[in-house]
Length: 68
Image 1 (cartoon, rainbow, N blue to C red):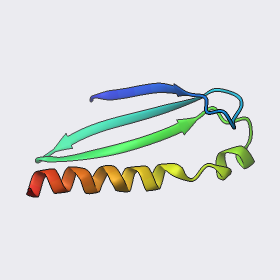
Image 2 (cartoon, one colour):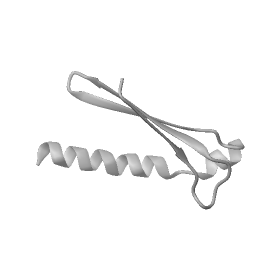
Image 3 (cartoon, rainbow, N blue to C red):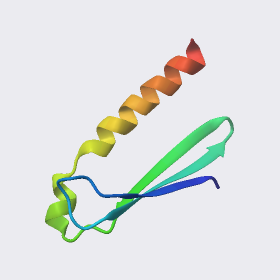
Image 4 (cartoon, rainbow, N blue to C red):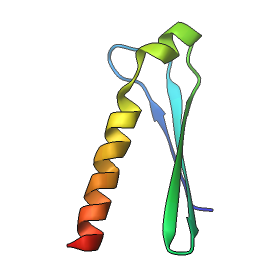
């Protein structure tokens, strides 16, 4: 299974966290599972809500490239 993993340390957040994308292809469809771990607390985890927005943009881009 393809994997992309990187550390994340934006200016507004401590400590460094880990972002992991697991990609799985089945019958011509790729599923992306994103895991963002290593937050100092549940509160700090809950404050970050950017991934759904980013994944929606990525999906729209891929779907437009496939159909275009």
